Length: 492
Image (cartoon, rainbow, N blue to C red; front, side):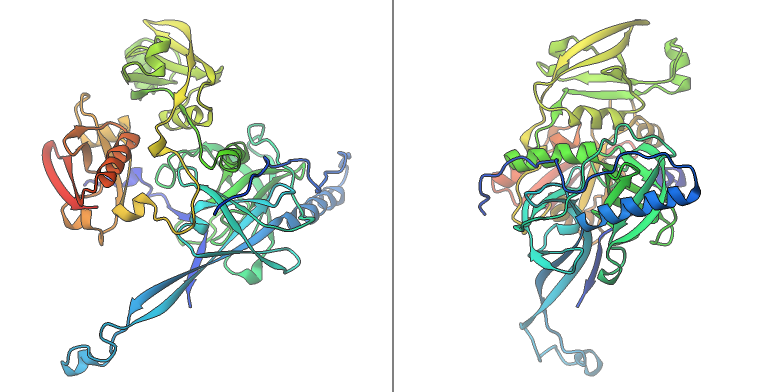
């Protein structure tokens, strides 16, 4: 694989690091939607005429927001086989402890934000994924067990609940209105519990960042406010004292803070939380189409259009929402509800942020003429939605040992694929996985599961779920590598 392909996934730029920090040593009652009328009130805006005034305002915001940020500690107990450390030196088989096991406790650290008086806490899915016990440490040092309400791995959001009176909360703001250059505070528990409620100051460096190697749906806020491992799930606070983001990841060459941090916009996080609290699962809008490419300057000249923006419509699902609305192959989608479409990733995230049956307005270019198409969205197949979790369920990607993503036009060019090739890209794969041992590799293009053609990650996971439900112990993949189709069978 050439270096240019590796560069696409950030090898030459930086490593994206999830911020939870690990080291070694249900029934839900009927609940109401979170109440955002919170106790942490923002004072009426006052004119800032001196640096001291500005300093006092920042101090005031930090003091009011900090109590609503909590430290999340987790534990998972595992059993490992005991070995005789001296057997290898004497050539004897491992007799002492043969077949015996001992307990191994994996502990983790992250952050969370209390957003409602009922005790609801937003954090990251990767902070609590697969653990046995979750505890919350409050600003005053009190510890309390937390209930896991639900998770959404596709956005890396999890919702917890604590049973406690008079909890401090922070008001939920609006991330859509954030401007690049705006001041923000990052609050969380970096590196260790001893550094809980660390406050750092910075600006919004960029918006709309896509981290497809971490989550299916992104649109992250980038900030230079110092955040480090352990800050996962912590708060990004604006100068109104309102929560505008959930800190989630960093880009770093060293693994520590390099001034490039990413937060999940609160508009998206709240949308996920509301669904998990109300229904136990996330319902996403579904358009029913795949892209045939993005419009850059070269493509715009080739198509004879003035502005380099939008995505080209590829295959349209039969009887899907897009087809019913009249969307056609080769249409160029340039806007959603009058918001400009920049790329496929942000477009897909935007569509998924709507709810099923929402009506949206797509601005398109067809035959060189601008038109408007009204679409009533469907529901993304349930296999791709998030659901309630008991904290012990394994993520399918962990079970498989690899992750997949959409086959973008950029990757098509890098892999020199013909335009009619449909499939998904193997994004990352663990060398210890059964799939790797059977021959699957990073950047392979999976075109079919059990000889059924697929073109999106949703279809891929749907077919795997069907195979699992049918009791299949192995699955057959059709894989395209360097223009040659291969078949790889691996154990589920």
